[in-house]
Amino acid sequence: MEKVGGLMVKTSLLGRRRAFTLIELLVVIAIIAVLIALLLPAVQQARESARRTQCKNNLKQLGLALHNYHDVTNMLPRLNQGSRYDGSGDGWRSHSAQTMILPYIDRAALYSKINFDVNACCESGGGPYNMETAGNPTGVQMNIQAPIAAFLCPSDQAIAGMAGPNNYAVCIGPNKGFNIPVAEMNGAFNRTPSFGLSGIIDGTSNTIFVSEIVKSGGGGAANSQSYLAGSRNGSGIAADGSAAGLNSYPGGLTKGQVDIWGTACAAVAAVSGERIGERWYHGEVGRTGVGTLLGINSKFPNCSFHCNGCHYDGSTLFGARSLHTGGAHHLMGDGAVRFISENVDWQTYQRLGSRNDGETVGEY
Image (cartoon, rainbow, N blue to C red; front, side):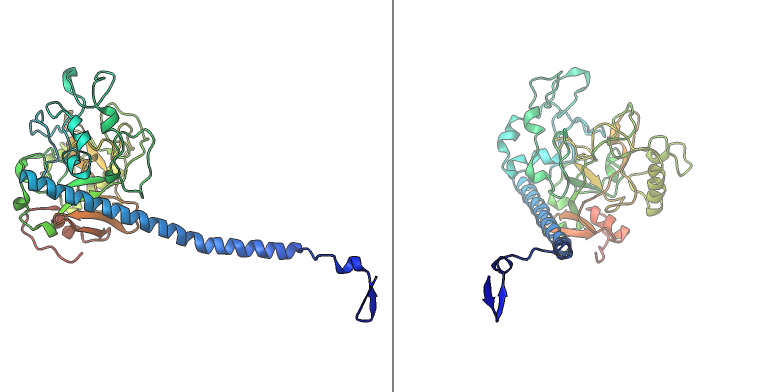
């Protein structure tokens, strides 16, 4: 017993610590939960901001590489490259523009291992090609199928088993694929002929060189033809009433025609097989090339249209897409990287995709 304030109090009572009540504990937990709820979005936003900056820096690096390539060759790389490529629309065996700039992104050692006298992949008749497979064990698969950081936007997820993943595609302009007459090709990157910066008639600052794309994870119904998984099988669709369907159109489409075809493609099943953004070394629309007709982050799916066995090199509607909110990064011909809104005027975007339409580009 001790005397406290004139009163005798048990010492055991003075030494006893007061514990948290259940209500107090719940209040503390609630405060912590509120703080987490407030801070987590800020942390996530900061991380996405860093990823977005890295994505932009990757495009700047690709722009510098393209200009260095041009300084050496006086030409821009084509969408399709290689001595075995005959200039036809069947580009699925050819090398890509990305392959050609490897020496300018510190990948000269890898570039030196590629044999440009044979195709990138899948030579018909069983001939040699660069990708290592069971039928071609001497290829350089382990090199060319490995991820290359400069070709990847960190905002997009890595996909298990994807060979040679890629998030940046050269711009073919306002065209439905590249299996179209050469005279109708008006993007900065086409299958043929080769041209330099002097061929960018509309000005390099007004012409898209490279756009972001989002890799697809596959899935969908199995099919016997080579469509890119995540896109739609548009073969046989004749939404305009024509027997030949989209393949009967010239290279460009009107906005109304794009809406017709986009709606028709959205109504058919997704396909399986190789995936969008797979194989950066293949010069193909959907892998390493993309057009402007669909716009940015379109509500319509990417769509493939076969043309008598020419795979997705034929009529295609593949658009720029990103996981950044509100739009996608684009590398312009002058090396500037612009984040273009997904709400950009459709006609303005088509003019940005063309290198030689002679039209004035409005505000965007």
